[in-house]
Image (cartoon, rainbow, N blue to C red; front, side):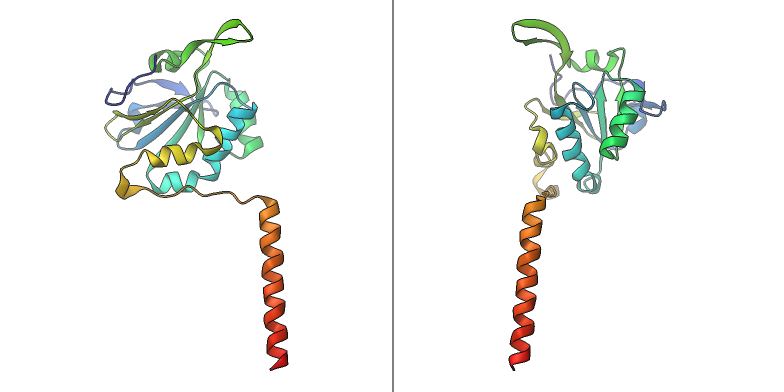
Length: 189
């Protein structure tokens, strides 16, 4: 079972993708987004990581340190970071120590088969090490918005929306047409 807001965030020490030791107590004084995800390079997990990547600067401006946690190895995390150009650290909780402390190692069911796996949950930990928010219904494609909406109203900042290549192309063509019309109008004068 997931921890609740107001709980002290359990401390941990585990390696990141580069084998560097990371502990929650070492991040006291910073707001931490601790997001648990099932597996590197799977569709939902990639969508979530890329949404956080695309909005990383906005999250940083709001004072957040983003840490992803899965049971994947350091090597798997290195490949995932390189492939998706992720700017934040991924923690290799191969022994499921953090998962068990945070209640994210749970029984799941798929096609009638039961198995143990990671619950997709995000904890927002404040500067004092207390859990401010728990996001249990993660929208992988809009996760940064979910995180930013959990801030006090005075500090909210909108997440950067990604414009599709098709929309960018349409805007570019419209801009060129507008510029061409202005040039023609100037020549007529």
